[in-house]
Image 1 (cartoon, helix red, strand yellow):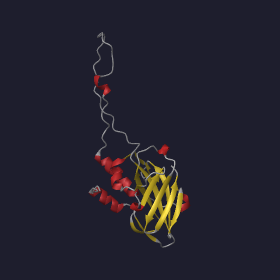
Image 2 (image 1 turned 30 degrees about the vertical axis):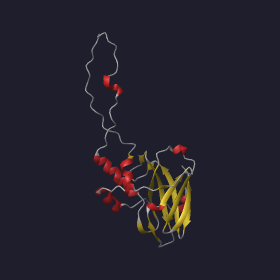
Image 3 (image 1 turned 90 degrees about the vertical axis):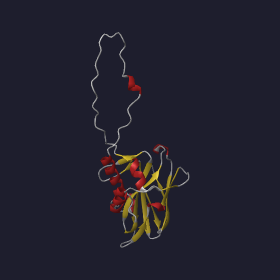
Image 4 (image 1 turned 45 degrees about the horizontal axis):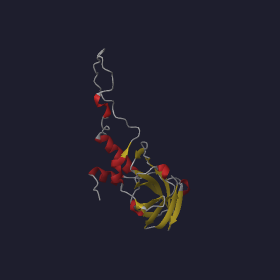
Length: 204
């Protein structure tokens, strides 16, 4: 298991999850696990945060809510969830500390590079054409570390809060999936934890 960086551990201690929706009925599906109601909605490759959505090409996210009677508490852990896509083998959830390296802001654009002017040769008798290195495009721009750190903190703040907590609670749980979202026909989210067991059917 990959160790989390000090920044990730610090942000994890500050993670507060997402605001729970008014009721379990506000999610795609919900099911009972003992005295706890678990609700969920598939967000696809989008990672909704307070500062706007992030995206990942390697992971998908599910927004999960825990609900219970007044004064109820529950011991919550993302590791209690697994996801079966298209009837295949269920995949365990992944720690958000691994996911943060694979997210980006779709709105982020690198600064425009300064391109030196090229001399133009007229009447050289040779056909004009693209520069010699045009067949080798430059590597993708590297995201500055401070921007990457900001994205990581945004993910960590909306991850599902863990531990013994008062209800309701809500947050994101992540699963590795590199296939195309439009190829998903069925999804079953399974919870097996201290509250009991439940299966939720989600829509892509």
